[in-house]
Amino acid sequence: MTKSENKSGKKKLNLAELYGKYGTFAILVIIFTLSSIFTRGFATQANLTNVLRQITVVTILALGATFVIILGHINVAYGSMIALIGVISTAIMVATGSVFVAVMGAVGLGLVIGGINGYVITKFHIPAFIMTLAVTTVARGAVLLFTNGVPITGMGSAYTFIGQGYIGFMPVSVLILIVLFIISWIMLNKTRFGRHVYAVGGNEQAAIASGIKSKNVVRKAFLFDGFTAAIAGVVLMSRMNSGQPAAGLAYEFDAITAVVVGGTSLAGGSGTVVGTIIGAVIVGIINNVQNLANVNTYWQQIVKGLIILIAVIIDKMTKRASSAKK
Image (cartoon, rainbow, N blue to C red):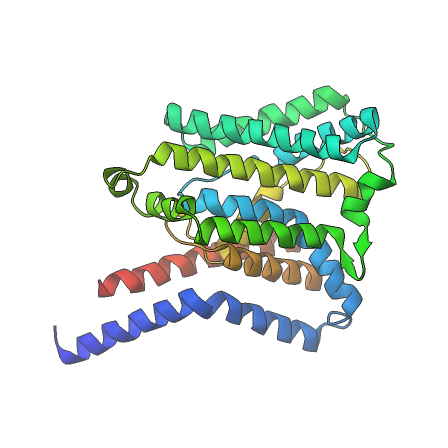
């Protein structure tokens, strides 16, 4: 290799490393600054608080999705999962009058669905996309069958406080998100399980050869994925003040977009929950600015699709630049 080639390769590697570490945050700063300058009403406390409230459900889903995607899998059933879990939770609330029982019922159902996903995927070697696609249809059919298409109402103020209430100036749903973020960060960065997630996602065969039980890692990840879906379902239904059987449509796309925009590779092996939070905020700001600017909802859908496409292309280019040096 010539000296010039070596310098060129070094430059590529440095750029790839810089983007991997700071690129998503830099994009957030740029988007926030431009939005504050050019969009009237954006940089107000009321609007920024509204942005945080709007992204809580999707971001909670995205935290669980981060683990799954780092492992090289994908869950496309989030929308149907939170609809079914949320409706069951509201039904329990109406029947028992206990917020604790309603939330525990939701968590239990979320763990069951997540457990089934992880077990079937690893036991029968079914691609996660196919498995969760089947779950999408089953869960959506189940929620319509359970409710007969009619929303469940009458949960009471104690339940709706979860999604609509405030503690001081901070929405309760945002506080829940913060707690889940801390839990997710600790799990992924400070535990053996987190190290195993990266190992299996990066190279499953090498991980198995080193003694890691990859099936157990995948199953645990899908359990946590089900748990976050359960919390998201409760927050969504409490915010809507009813158990809506049609709720959650396209939420899986929004959650996956937040994860990918945050720098987690769809190929697996890399990603952070900090990046996921930043990705969710970026997507939330873009959606908010479009709403403030009265952009047609059809155009907003096009923008969402372009965002995830650009994020995937950037991820591919960054990985190619990194691998070119190795």
